[in-house]
Structures are given as structure tokens and as C-alpha cells.
Image 1 (tube, each protein chain N blue to C red):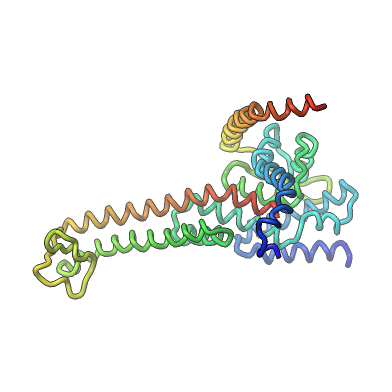
Image 2 (image 1 turned 90 degrees about the vertical axis):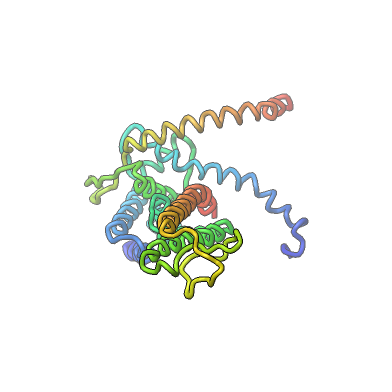
Length: 133
Length: 196
């Protein structure tokens, strides 16, 4: 069905697109968010997940963050150390390297100017919404 | 199934699917995920089963680790094998990867071939070179037998230098092109994958 009538059936994916787009936007920001969570000091994986939830409403699937941390470490942006915890098992703490700090500074600048530009672009859209209310 | 058994079977599958990584990397990942499951269950009061469900299938988790490491390692590597393998991994998700894979293969063959002929010139001086007839290139490389007269070889021993430089430049350009492609595709690729 879907294949024989691509035009007609394209409605459903379009209706789903805002969600999909938002999910993509959030997940595209994961690397920057993970780096930012470590700006003030070392954290372990679950703390990073909680930190992002409370500070940015960036609710991630729990499995998403660990491969990202692993890659950031492989790229030399993070280091890690195992710390014996009172919980009875060691935890892997991540902290930022100098290269990681440099990268995050660059990301923060790019992100802020990008977001500011898009906000200006969206002003008429948001103003119209206010008037309607 | 007890919670310990659930955890063990999850970690076993994870370990199996992380096989391409080094032993150290693999055991560290397994330890970290085990610590996560314990901490998350304790802190949120959820069952181990629920935490494992939130992590998603062990196969999918392992695949995210593998792809991330392979592609990020390759994008800083000089090894043709690693670069082509990473391109092949990206190519399973799109036409651009397939094109880059074959362009890369062609580039390596071309560059490598030129370097090899440069090295063969001192050994087979009469059979190696660039032959011209009436101002047109007839043939080049290592030929048995060499093109017959009136076609004649024009470069002589300078062929060695020219072929070495051209070959090396081709190899460098190929390496650089694949690495740029991997860097570009990586962000996008990872995003699309996490959506699913």
C-alpha cells in the first residue's frame, strides 16, 4: 500500500515529523550536553543522566549516554577513573581534559550564535501566537 | 529468573557483541554498565528488569559502542584497511558511503599502483614508463612487451620521481577524503541511529 501510493501515504509520516524532529534535535546535542555536565567537576554516568534531566530537561534513554562518553574519551576530550564507592562497587567517574574544555568552549560559541540567529528568525511566528492569545 | 541471572545474561550478550573491541575496553564497558544497573535500580527503586529494559537490547547497546569507536578511530587513522572498513560500516546506511568506499578503493589502487611502478622502473627500465606516439599517450605503467616502435618512452628515469610524487599525492588525497567523509557522516549517522 504505502509503496504504491507514496503521495497519499506521506501524510502519516508528516504528522509524526515534529516529534521526530525534536527527538533528533535533542539527541544531536547529546555530546555537547555530556561535556557541559562535566564542566564543574567529575561525575559518573548515572549522575550525568540525572544532571541533564534536572538542569536541561534533556531526558535521554539511559543507554544513549554511555557509548557517547566512551567515544568522547577515545577522542581525548574526557578522562575516566574508577572510584571505590560506599555502594560496594566501583564507579567510573569522568572528567574533562583541556582538549575537552577547548572543544566545549567552541561548541558553546557556535551554539549560542546559531540559537540567537534562529530566535530572531522565529520572532514573528511567536509574536503572532501571543496576539492570538 | 533471579535478578542476578537477568543481569548476568544481559552482560553476557553485551560482552559477546563487543567482541571486536580489546579485552580491556570490553571489560570496562561491562563493569560500567553493571554499576549503572545496580545504582539505577537502588536509586530509583525500580527493578533490575525495568532498568535493563530502559537500557534497551544488549545487542543495540553494543552496536552503538562499536560504531562510535570504529568511526572515531578511523577518522584519525592512516590505515587504508581501517578507513575502508569504517566506510563500509557507514555504507550499510546510505548510498554516499558506498560511493566513497569505491572511490577510496580506486584511489588506493591507483596511488599504490603508481608507487609500485616507480619502484619497478630501476629493475625493468625497458618495460616501465610513459609511451607516446604522435603527441598522444599510448600507454603507461609496466608492460610486457613494451609498446613497439614508433611509440617511444619519453620520461626515462625521471619516471621514478614523477610516479612516486603522483602516487603519494593520490594516496594522501584518498586518505584525507575518506577521513573527512567519516567525520562529516559520523555526527549525522549517530543522530539518525539513536532515533531508532
